[in-house]
Length: 163
Image 1 (tube, rainbow, N blue to C red):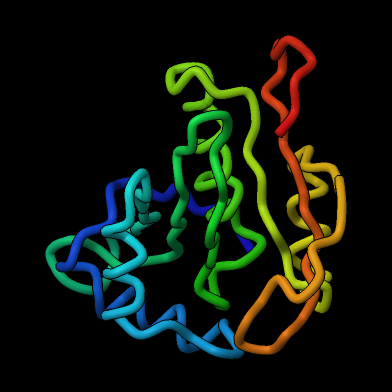
Image 2 (cartoon, rainbow, N blue to C red):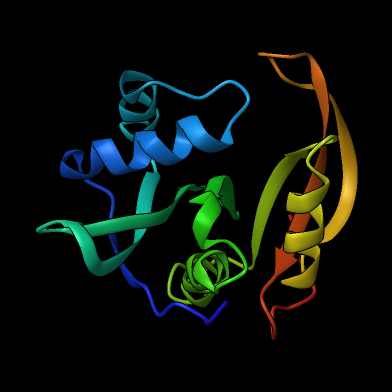
């Protein structure tokens, strides 16, 4: 499959249908729009979309999205999800790359993510992007009681600090 060059934009309520379609197709226990909206309204939480100008409405077709929290010391990757038919085409890499590219501007050195222990595909994807496993969080996911692996991406050139 050829790579897609998505347009990256901020997540808004106008994108609810596309985001929910991906959330429902991918997640074992998908969040509702009310839950996503509440999470998005939390301090420091932002969202980005990867969209294609082909198909869908005026805003384009949603290919993937990410939610992240800019914390005092690092950036927490809350969710990075790509439409199943658009995987392995550069969409997730574009979203993750945008986040990594903003670290210096945000004066942060690292991105942390807690990944489900059963999400091997996510672990491998993040590992290919330079994230490294740093620990285990017991009962990290309240919906299943599943443990999570903490993975950290450290900005190249950072002064050796990690989250």
